[in-house]
Every structure is written in C-alpha cells, then in structure tokens.
Length: 327
Ligand SMILES: [Zn+2]
Image 1 (cartoon, rainbow, N blue to C red):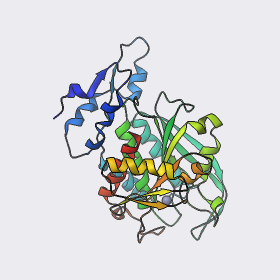
Image 2 (cartoon, helix red, strand yellow):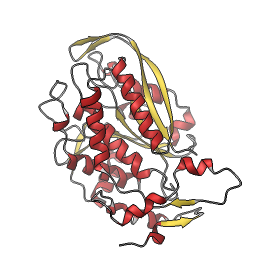
Image 3 (tube, rainbow, N blue to C red):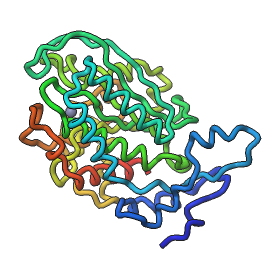
Image 4 (cartoon, rainbow, N blue to C red):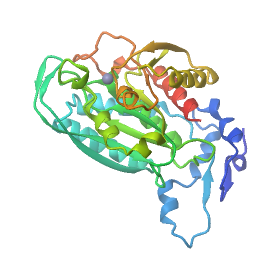
C-alpha cells in the first residue's frame, strides 16, 4: 500500500510528469485500495470557495480510481429511468439536466449551450424541428485559448430506442473520466473539456444531417480556440465487445497517439475507419479527432438497446484507454 503522504503534495505548483504518469496503470475500482486515500483532497469548487486569504490547500496529483459503478449508473438512469431521448424532446432535456448535475457534483464548471436542429426523418421516425443542447464541463480555472483536450459522448437517441449502448455507454465512460479527474492537478498534462453532445443521431440521409451538437460546438470556437484543441475523443457505443475500436476519420496521427496510449495501458484495441460520430465535426474543421467504440450488436437503434446489452468490462477498458491518452 502506498502511504497517503505520497499521494498529496501541499501547495503544489508543478508536478513532474513522470510522477503523474507513473500511476496510469493503477486505476481500478476494486474497493478500498490505496488510491482511496486521495478522496480527502480538495475539489476545484472547495478550492475556489476558500477565497484569496486562505492558505494554499492540498492539490491532488494522482487521479481517483476508475469506478465502473458510475458508468453503469449512468446507463441505468438514461436508458431505463429516462428512456428514449430524441434530441428536441422533453426527455432529452431531462437527461441534459441530469448530466449537468453529475458534472457539477464532480466539481466542474458546467454550461448548457442550446442550438437549433431541423425536423426530418430519424431512423424511420419523423422528428420535428426544435432546440437541442450540449452539456459542457470544464475545470474551474479553464482557459479555452490554452492547449487542451476534449472528450465527448452523445446524450440523444433515435426516437425508438432507449439507447443503453448508443450512447448511454459513452456518457457512462465520460462520467467515469469526470470522476477520475475531479480535483486532480492538470500539471504535467493537458486540461480536459468533457461534453455531452445533443443531436448526434441522424435526421436525414446525408453527412450534413447529423452531428448537430458537435458541429455547433466547433462553430462556436474562435480560430485560437480551435488551435488550442490538441485532441478530441468521441465515445460512441463503448459497452459491447471485448476489444475497443479506435477509429480514424482520416487523421492517422491522432489515432496513432491513442493506439500508443492503449498499448501502454495494455488495452485490447481494433483500429478502424469511421466518420459517423462527433469526432468527424472536429476533424473536418482541422482538429485531431478519433472515435472509440462502434462494435456491432443486435439491439442497435431498436427498443431492445437496454442496459443488459452493456457490459461493465468494456466500459472499464474504454475508460482505461481514455485515461492513458489523457495522461
Ligand atoms: Zn451513437
């Protein structure tokens, strides 16, 4: 067991990268392991609340252990309790409020950014025009003009599906990552923006008829902010199978970085080509983007995409890969 003193550095300004990355392979949620000692550390919110006269508070260097229960709870909440979440409907709004609250609890600054989407045909079901929204979580001291990473998953579903695998699984892994990074210093690595995208699912047959949320997010970035995005991961269908698909949309350099991170973390992966998720919105505007996930399964875009489709081990594999890439 590592002593608690090794996990905390008081008033830390700069953490050596080697020290932070040395923990990369140690995340798990097997119970009261040594990393639990980090939970006493200060969250971004409590640090902000201490005011300028307070003495420096401890900053956690190490990340919290991954908790797959967090991912499974998200799948249950979104796919069983809320159910289908068509991007302009009331159940999508419930889901976005729920996700915003989870991000806030983990200590992030959260904003919901609405955008218009047209009506159309979503997987055979007519859908009306309306507004959807992105749920965006940033570290409290985040500056979007400084280099950073983006990790996103889509919160909406096609109208006929509760979307456990597509894509409550992605939101589940996103929240596992939010929890692992919560309160940790980003010294030695890039800060991370976490986004639940609205309206990823198609509302028509062409490339222009989906990914509305990620396209709205990218369109809202200045040139300097786009240059500051050093990598983007879209988590889309990440709870089926036993190998993590790592898909390029033409950016092989970005995919190579993810594959190297996965090999370091000993995650089984399958390289692939794919444009049909939110990473494409970033790649087409010149930013490095990669999709994780997309293994075929029987319940795709159907009423049988229920929580039992999603397996905990694949959520954990995907989250380990994301953390290795971040670190
Ligand atoms: Zn999807």
